[in-house]
Length: 174
Image (tube, rainbow, N blue to C red; front, side, top):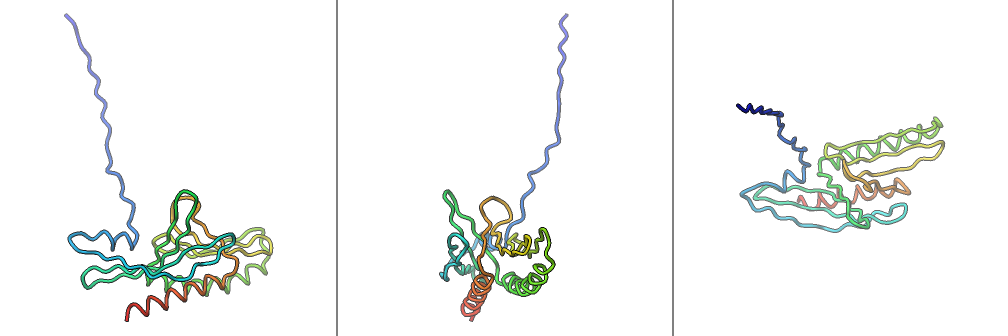
């Protein structure tokens, strides 16, 4: 008589956790409706070694409209884009004002290294770091990935870009 032994191993399977959508993805992924994208170019942002393209992207679906300030940095093989929703843009502008006043104090404190930043719910970052007595401003376009940090030579450059974006969105909302 032959005896057979069977071994069965089971594993609990978890559903893949869905990463939270950005505000742009949530608006653009509506179903059973028509979603229209319209882009309005703005001046490029001068970076330390290159430029970043900018635009206002308006999305409309029925009576709903969404306005996003987009900053795009093209790389050798791909590009990274930040999509900052209008209400987040207003918060970023407020944060920039606060960060500017703190930056001056932080440089005077002469730290070995210090970093200060503001992060939106979609993962866009605006900040600076102080190394010794030098300050360097940056934008991090996306929450994940590489080659998505832009270094700004002068904080006034980004301040102007944000104000231009705010003005253009307010013009389009009328």
